[in-house]
Image 1 (cartoon, rainbow, N blue to C red):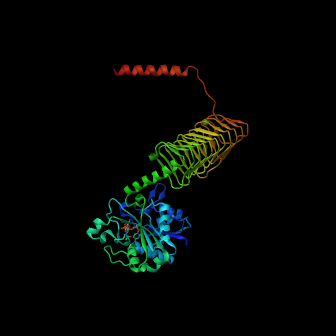
Image 2: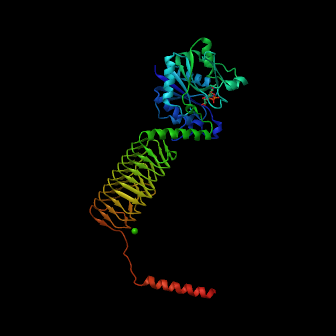
Length: 471
Ligand code: UD1
Ligand code: CA
């Protein structure tokens, strides 16, 4: 039977003090609710249902492109049991192992979910509850067991006697695996006769006990996986744990970090062996780094590919492609469509947008290159730019192979510079330059012998005279 995961994410999260739903807040580069959905996916869930409520549209939008995720809206928040009833009403009966996760509990590992499912299947349990023993159990539902250790019920903190609150320390994590068919057959037995007048999903355990259906509790091996996020302080704590988990995974696979506390790597980023990530580096989204690269310090790469042996220093890049042995920075800005071919160099205070920089070509200092196709072996002098925008339209610049562009050149697009051409420094190029030609656009230099010396003498005389007058 294929497994289903239901991620409860309808809550408001008032303690976030936010105009946005709690589960839309980011943990590294992904919204909180993305993490349990992804863990369920990795654990083999073929159907993933997210229960949305507060800020429903914003949460739905997160999964707009995920074909394996369905959202069900819970318009009234009448409790976790009610949330599951809404799913049943919207999608029909539960089938196969049905795992319940929380959208605000992002550290849950796929293997923990798999273990929970395997345990439930092996024991033919109607339900297995994942439990924990936190240092402070205040607020959590408590697990009641009989003298033989069998699970009797889950009692919410507010429904416990003071004695139960003090002695029952094993807590409900809120994560379960249910047998889908038995859950469908019995979920309507949940009532709301309790302290909060809510439909508690936890009541299923007691209901099954009375029916003689087998239920089980599995103590989680790593409590930190069950940490929930209710405030921005907890969001930062959970982020730190996830950052360490990801970075330790990378280091174990052969990536060097001078200080892993100062490196942030997103959920889907990959980094090749013997690459080094320096402090204040952030790698987000669909970013992939090859082998033997040096990235950072002070670098943020988003949806960017970097091939083997490249070095990217103090750079911000978005949707860029950096091929093997390219050097970038310090202080470069690569915008969408920047494609640096093998061995190219983009240096300091250089911005590249929607342009190909050919093999071994160099744009070393203070340049803007936009909407340009550049061949190989080109050298762009300091301060040279493409003028690609006329205020309304963007135009392309084409630069052939082995072109040498002198410093402070304006290339007013649309314009083409042929192979092997030479452009004199400080030219404003508005006409195409044929291959092999020299283009210079520059007024003649004027020379007046002795002028500077005479001028300085005159100014000094004036200064001396005015000081004399004042004294
Ligand atoms: C729940 C459990 C408690 C457990 C604790 C662990 C119940 C009745 N209690 O309590 O035993 O120890 O989790 O954290 O289940 N939600 C909805 N719709 C609703 C209500 C809640 O989607 O109508 C979502 C919330 O957004 C949240 C999760 O379910 O992500 C938990 O809900 P909450 O009401 O906070 O339950 P707890 O009081 O934490
Ligand atoms: Ca000029």
